[in-house]
Image (cartoon, rainbow over all chains, first blue to last red; front, top):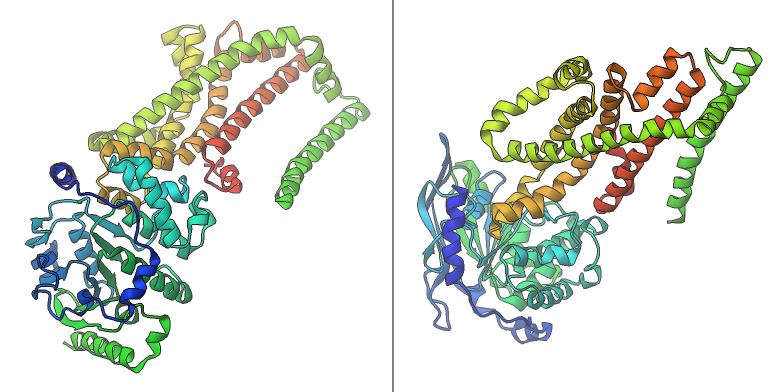
Length: 305
Length: 263
């Protein structure tokens, strides 16, 4: 099963050698967009073609279903993700959001329906996807830089070229001075930033994040969330962010998809059109709290059923 | 940093002090109680025997050490290879692994006479017994090590399309290293026991043979001198492994590296 997925991907790999820009946009560019909302964040529905004339959805989940034995974890789940969008999948613990993400990552297969990335059916892990897990899962025997370069080794990409990119990513995440340190010498927040850099190092177009801040304390969470927003603005990746934190979803996302209790399906969808970059103080604004309330009600409604 | 060096010095100094006091107590009690040298010679007499008859002692020590290291080396290679098979083959894991674990309860030393019957009184019996006793803890520890890989790490590697070969060398092997070293520390002491017991049973050379011979001659100082040499060698071999471990498993805090020896 796994082997099949790997083989399928080997073929995929050769098709997907895209040009890659080693330099990351300078942080200064973000100021240009800070006033105006990014178009991607404002698309009301995924079916609408994004401005700029690109093909519509980069990720398309349709009629997805997953059963474990008798248990139906995901039931007829459909949503699209636009190129460059920051989408959160919000839902209570154990509602199958992680399962969903693992299916998009190609680590597990669906029981029904399909997932398409760039119009190709997901049959296994793909190079254009980077994943950040709940825990940083760094290799303890590798330095920070070696950890970030790990995907490059696995994917057999030219190391010297990506070394520079890795350093730039670390710089962007403000942890470049720890490049030569071992993971155990870092704090939890720093480790998760290393994991984010690792997921981005091979320049994937899609970043999947599975409750990446759940192991962090509240203060570090906010800090890393602000960092993630900045990294996203600089890199313009499509992000699918799975979380059970309403506040986190509202703060980070352009759009939030709410999943209900098992069997999970989409019960609500909300566009968050707050201007970026959003400071953490935005979470105290009335507009923000109205959005949070809306999301909370949606989740509560699903519980009441 | 200074503190850790201080702690380290203390952790070495205290046991040495206690050992010195014990030896001193031994020396004094033997002298004051007038215990005959045949029963229990004082440490000074043992030291004297060690110095005076070092030719004899070393001549018998080398073959034993050689066989110990050879048996140990084979057990490490064999143990790790079998552990790899256990990790990657369902049949071996489900069929052989439980047998290996259950066979742990057999006191393998008791097989020594049987080995003499099969392989004669030469070095082959000693080598095989050393290998046999050292092999099992090595295999079990290595297998545990290969299995110890975090499921999330495995997943992470798969999302980056790591091949099984890459996953083995870049993830499983380093993850298993601390366990492998823990196994090596157990195996080296067992390999020494294997060789000595085999030499007790039937052999014309080796430190085990010498201990038995000296016992037969009621030459207790020589016996104790041989035991002392054996202990020192065992300690040295263990220290070498612990040293290599500290270097190879550099990512673990030193305290852990010491603690893993218990396994």
